[in-house]
Amino acid sequence: MRHFFRASTGTLALLLGYFLAGTQPSFAQTNLSGYWDARTPNPGNDGTFRDTYFEIQQSGETLSGTLIRRPNGIPITGTFKDGAIHFVTVPPTPPPPPAGATARPAQRPMTFDGTYEDGKLLLQTQGRNGIVKSVAEKVTKEATLPPPPLPLPELKDLPDNGLARTPPMGWNSWNKFAGRVDDAAVRGMADAMVSSGMSKAGYVYINIDDTWELGRDANGNVTTNKKFPDMKALADYVHSKGLKIGIYSSPGPKTCAGYEGSFGHEVQDAKTYASWGIDYLKYDLCSGLDIYKDDAPTLQAIYQKMGQALQETNRPIIYSLCEYGRASVWTGWGTKSGGNLWRTTGDISDRWDSMDKIGFSQIKIAEYAKPGHWNDPDMLEIGNGGMTADEYRTHMSLWSLLAAPLIAGNDLRTMTDETKSILMNSEVIAIDQDPEYKPVVSVSSENKVEVLMRPLHDGSVIVGLFNRNDALTDAQFARSILPANLTGKKTKVRDLWKHEDVKMEGDTFKATIPSHGVVLLKISSR
Image 1 (spheres, one colour):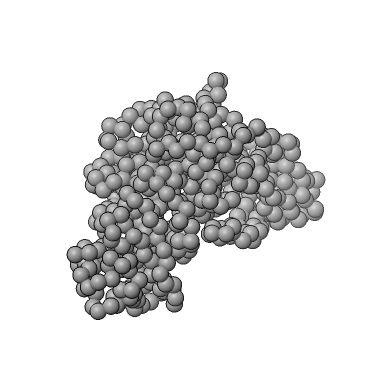
Image 2 (cartoon, one colour; image 1 turned 60 degrees about the horizontal axis):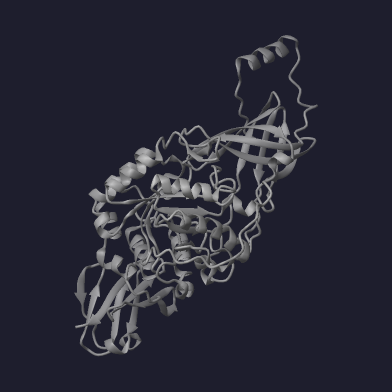
């Protein structure tokens, strides 16, 4: 057991008194049973805190209980001895995913260590960027409960807002910066999007994800924390670069990082976003599930409420639904609620297994996308360092074949030439942005080699040969898979990553593909 102790002057004096009296401090009469609120300063020194609620049950030195997260919480187990507390979460096995969705990864256990002092628990746990400290105090059970649900609108089909006729292209702060994003970083990304050539390649949105919020003023208007002193001025700066700006919220009372959500303030927040000059909203379900049912009619109503509020501002704002593929959003309710794009999976990570699993699971639902309404398998990880260049080329190729939004998630200010060559490959981007959407189809899938094909508006087709194996692998396809206009001998075959024309010998194209790599071809009439 690890013991951590944070002593104040008063505490040291008290301990000295015990020592001089020949007495050791006793915790035998202390019982931690009850409800606790652990308040943690949010990263980025923005002056906000996150509340994490626990129910602890103590029997002797043994602790059990629950980390309170809806709908069922996460069990905890641990010990309390001589003033030192230690407990770990025991996450349950995630349920099977809905049809067409990607399985959610299992949660990692969290370990909490600390001490009990003056009626408080001084805790620390390992976070993604180091040790995270919190102070927990006892609260009532009622304090841990979410607010009651508010009435939801009667379901209806919202009109198409006319936006996103091709998949949105831009940048989002979360993958690289998470809670460390601030005004300076966003301005820097806008500068880099222009200076790097990304804006000329089609990238236009600079999107701020979670952790910009502070709370609400006396009139209920959402306010920004000190990382973002003037959102209107920031939006004006981004617009001055010829770009557009996006923001983030949740239909629940709290965002996924524990910041202020839009629950009960949908119309008010939409008006605020419009007044700031916001062009894009990512609306993340998060704590909405603490309050509302997890079914298609309820989710549609939740998202319709904000969708209508955005449309009533009369400002063109792209509406991005982040509901993780729940209730088969792609089958219709995402469009009906006003969504321009909807998440179809859990969060992506900068790892081959995550990108591979998410990307190839999307082919079977590609038919549901259409101009103005796109499947979103999450943001790009290209340039964040967790995958090889071949894997990043697979990432870009697959997302483009899927007509997925191309939302970069790296630091645009420090891109290598190789990262730029992947993100700004105009021939690959043209697949994603083809003006006449036709879905990708699987031609063959065997021995972890995938052959995918997507027709384009000009009569050409894209064929992608993907090697999902851990070693160099040969792949091929027959000319007979091509549309009738391309089965003759007079065809042009262009390798879109080598940027050169290649020959198709006879009736079969053959290639040797590196591990986790791709050969991406455009085949057209001469």
